[in-house]
Image 1 (spheres, rainbow, N blue to C red):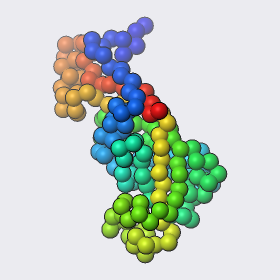
Image 2: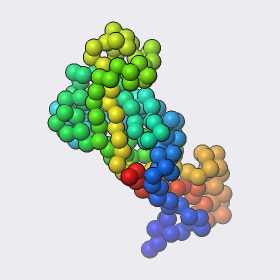
Image 3: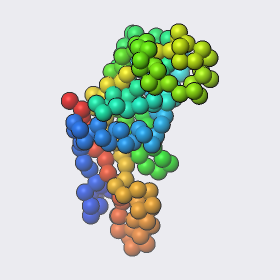
Image 4: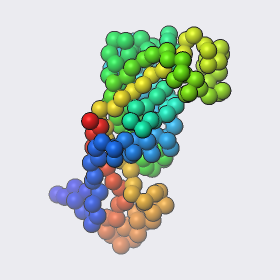
Length: 179
């Protein structure tokens, strides 16, 4: 039996590396805003997984977060800096999984650059709160699932495909490599 991917008249797989992979991650993380941040070590009740807000994805593909020095996450990163990040951009499309390595610092210039007033909810001392750390995640590899032309076109293609009985899926997926 053929898989759903083999029934499509269009190419739906495209692996990306280097600058193309970085650009895909920047586009998707800009729209996603948050992710599930999973550490390899698990000390707290969350089993090493928690939602985190991405403060920035830079031109080198590194993802930047702010965290508390006394969090389970930071303690887990001392034990093992390997992480997985899981993103969902919208309800029906834009899924991203990244495997990377985290570095934790208290670089004041980075904290200032990434600071947003709403973060006072967690860091009541403001951007000078001594508990703030910066986490930089450098991705090594990943995988993405998205659509080629946006949710409206993808939805229309699925509807037309259902009417005429042909697979007209607008999806695209592939591996991401960064080095």
